[in-house]
Length: 106
Image 1 (spheres, rainbow, N blue to C red):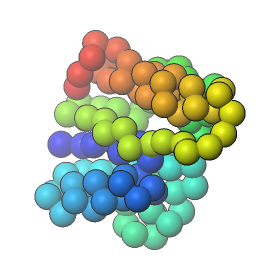
Image 2: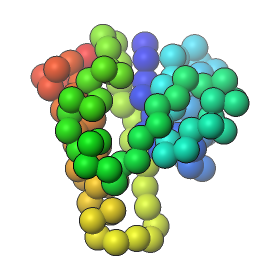
Image 3: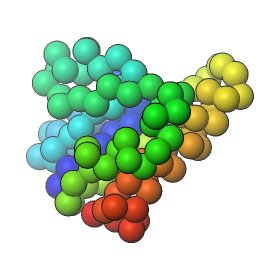
C-alpha cells in the first residue's frame, strides 16, 4: 500500500507519516519544503497547495498509482481567503479526483 500524506511536515502529518512507515506502508510525504522529510528518509513530493497547478487532478495523477490512498493533514492557521481555499478545498479535491484516474479510488 502507498499513502500520500498531504502536509507531512506539520505536527500531525509528521506523526501520521512516521506511524504509517513503521507499519510498513510506503509513504509519499508532501510539503511545500520537503527537504527535512527527505533527510528523515521519506520519499517526498514538493508542492504548494496555493499554487493553481495543484488545483488540477492532472498534477496529482503521476504520483497516485494503484493501491494508493491519501491522508490530508495540510492546513493553514493564517493567510488570505484564496490561500485557505487552495489548501483546504481546491488542492485536496484535485488530489482525490486524481486517484485512479478520477474514479474515486485506487
